[in-house]
Image (cartoon, rainbow, N blue to C red; front, top):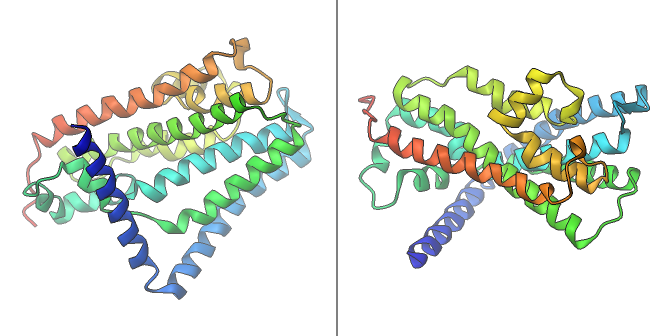
Amino acid sequence: MEGRYMNTIHLYIKSIGMLLKSHLQYPSSFIMQTLAQLVMEGGEMMVVILIVDRFESLKGWSGGNLYFFFGIMSVSFYLTEMFGRGITGDFPSMVRTGRLDTFLVRPRGVLTQVLCGGTDPRRITCIAVGVAALIMGSRLSDIVWTPLKALALAESIAMSCLLILGLFMIEAIFCIFSVKSVELVNAITYGGRSACQYPIDVYPLPLRALFTVIAPFALTMHVPASYILDKPLYGWPMWTAFVTPFSGVLVFGVMTVLFHLGMRHYRSTGS
């Protein structure tokens, strides 16, 4: 079992490497599209800069704190989009064109093949913007880094990536039955990215409940981030910063089970 698991990881890394090389075969196109991504994410960053310039604090959170939250969300979201493109963007077209049918006759699991089937290296500039925001937020917030805080940050990003991937799998599951993508899911994924790049407690109760219980960005990102900033969210104890992020694993695990159940009912589009 362990050998098969390691072999799957090796296959994924090899597939992603091949896909990255294929993108770089057209360097001019790659550079222009990557710069376009930089402009897009730079615009998002400008919104935060304008808010910080206009207000000294937002419900007790300083400008540096806002940069830090923005950075965690950007790094987590675009890492997921970069390495999980098979689920986050390509799956609906796989169903519509019938390309998913070819995965069913291969010895590997469908989900493994889907994840190995797409990557988006253009997102590297978006990740760079997120890293810059994290560094700015750290310096402006005067964070005193310790091994525990570094662990909390790494855990938060890793678990948030699993959460985001799990949420995108909701659309993939719907596509198995409806062929077309479900735009309502984007309210949770892309809408969650836009909303949760700010501290969750600045929003009214319904939104806090949505992003704590249904799509728990607050648990994977905001609780550990607030611990790192020495401003525990809701006054929760320190240990919660290392426990709540595992809600990302829970969401991903549940969606993986539902995905496999959905594939049992998959019917080819006949393309």
